[in-house]
Structure formats: C-alpha cells, structure tokens
Length: 271
Image (cartoon, rainbow, N blue to C red):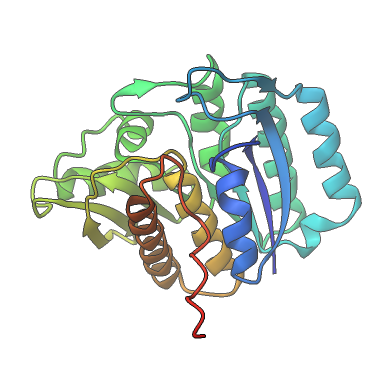
C-alpha cells in the first residue's frame, strides 16, 4: 500500500503534506511525499519564510520516484497545492506518465485553487488543473467554490451540485467529492462533504464548528487516499475520512489551538 503525495510542505503547522502524511502513515499506508513548496508556516501568520520550489527540483524528485519503481508499487497518486504554473506542468506531466505506466493507479486530484469566492494560486495554475490534472484524474476533491469554478455551474442546491459534478466527470473523473458544502437544504449548523458518482449524491454531514484551521481539505484528501490504498470502496473511504477530520476538529477546538491537533492526547495513566 503506497500513496505518492505531491503537495506543499511547512515546518510549523499542518497543511499539504504536513497535514496528510502522518495520518496516512497512521492508517498503515506507506507514503512517498514530494514537496512543491517549502515554507516556515502557512500564510495566515504575520510572517512566512521559504519559497515555492523550482520546477527543475520538483522534476528531479519525481524522476527519482520513477527510477525507484514507485509508480508501479503505488495504489494512489495524490496531487494538491502546486505553487507555480511551472510546477503544475511538471506534476501534470508526471501524473500522465504515471497513469499510462500503471493503469490501475487511482489518481486523486485535490484542485487547490481557492476558497470563499477567491482564487489564491499563481496565474496559470487554474488552467493546468482544469485542462490537464482534472481530466487525468480518477477522483477530484474540490471545495464548493472550486467545483463551481471548474464546472462553470452554480451549486446552490443538490441539482446544481449534481450538474456541476457531471460536468467534471464528463472530462474523465469517475467521481467528485465536494467538500465544505452548504446547500439550500443543508441542515442549519451543518456542513457537508458530498460524493457525486454515477448520477447520484451521497451526503456526509457534520456539525459546523466555530473554528477554521488551515489544512482540513488536505487532511481529508490524504485520509481518502489512505483508505482507497487499503482497498476501501469510495463511499466507505469518504465516510471514514469525514469522521476522522471531524474528530480532529473537535480535538483542535478543545485544545484552543490555531493548528489542527493531528495526534490524540495520550490516555490518562492509572496509578
């Protein structure tokens, strides 16, 4: 069981691979983690240091992945935050080669583009995600804003979400996992993750907590990848991942932390 995970990395906090790798490993899955950026922390803080990695370096790291035969071993290829258009092109090239070399490989594209109505990635990344990574993917995990952006269809209700997902699936992916959804009939105080596949919706609702730590989407995608790598059906993979993310958010809220608390506190010892 191996996941190749290509996304950002930070020294402090939990976004990108720094959110996804440990939880995947905790599920018993091996991870080949390839960084696209290396930053001191995510940009919410007053200062941030580090940089987007040069595309040549990312390309060399991915060449090493190929030369070690990891494409043949892998069950899932996960792509997330890319950092630059040049990196996006390099990752798209690799993803296309990987699926051609290993047709059984599940390609899980987390199209990290924006949120809350705003695009926050560098120019050109959206085009590569839309035109290359999404069509090559088996599954896509956009948030509600990203789904609307990629499909050009509003997702205010279930029919709109289904139509938007169908537009994405028409490009190639077998299913869409829409995250952070609030639809017209979503119960008050709830947020939904919705699996759209085969013309049907499967909805997973959890309470909306009054916190928004960075990296929840990265954690969710990583956990879905881990469960798929272990052979779970997609609906079970999503359900388990949603439950784990919610447990993490409850733990984070209880700790009063700005960063996700990925590791449960140690059980109290009985003296």
